[in-house]
Length: 212
Image 1 (cartoon, rainbow, N blue to C red):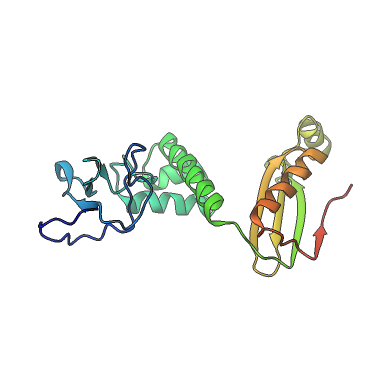
Image 2 (image 1 turned 90 degrees about the horizontal axis):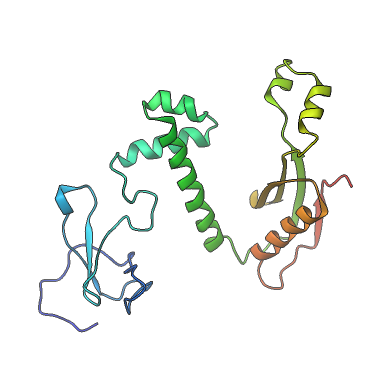
């Protein structure tokens, strides 16, 4: 990037990159092609300008906050309540937000987290892994409102099994999948774990909870 005689930028843009695929600097950080361009229409988010492609974009581009008009604090608090186990409708009542909005934020946060894990959770060195699976219990059964026999009949078609693989030392959850209790599903979990591990690094042994 050619230097200019303009006043040096006072806003740090080193953690941002130009998103358009046609830009020569697309995906590159800290190359000096970006500078701040104020807050469009007085909004809360800063606009960034790329000197290479003459493009403009908001600093929230590519995040779950992009296009959101509500406060960041509200969105974070809603997601925190969901993470603590509060239901969608209950969370919506607490923060006086539409349940569909809460659900949308949850789905968006899940997609963002999946992308984050795919990028950062790799080349893991583990000495051992514990694999296990369990099936969900109907709430009515736990409350005594439904008999065990009726619960089995209801779940017999497709039991929602949860598959997990965890490093017992660091407590890092390397894989979690939801699906039937089949060999194909087990292979899928093991394949997902192998993607997380460093190349050529396999645990010395596996402690598994598979029952057959």
